[in-house]
Image 1 (cartoon, rainbow, N blue to C red):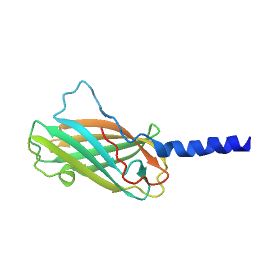
Image 2: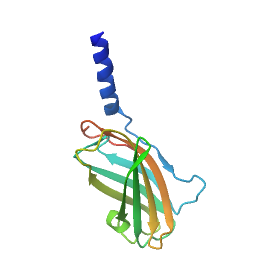
Image 3: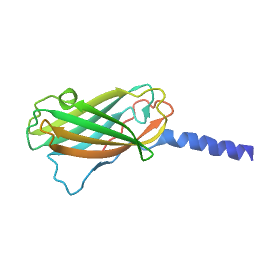
Image 4: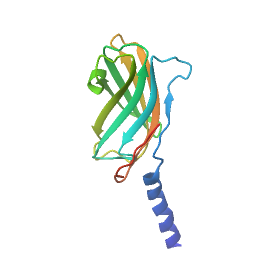
Length: 154
């Protein structure tokens, strides 16, 4: 019986480490025709490790030039909102953004006290006049240990 209990515990600890290496990106409102269309998402490393630098790269395209703006990030942990932050869009990509393809890249080290588990990130991009350009959500995991050379793709 102790062996079975140990096996169940080991599986519970192992499953978060083997979470999917790809993630789906969803628009916040499927009926909205956003100016910025998201083509892909890459998270490196994935799953994300506490205390290690993680890079989020969002491949996108726009049909309008963008002179500036901000990214509004909201993070939920198991459905509970836990964190918000704003970033200058021009610090995350080259401005002005011309019509066509571009990449938004953000790197951040999560504190060592960040609990492992499932998270949802909502990113809203607004221009310098506060017009919403896009809004996406995606799920990600924070593991117990680092997995080298793993990526999440759209």
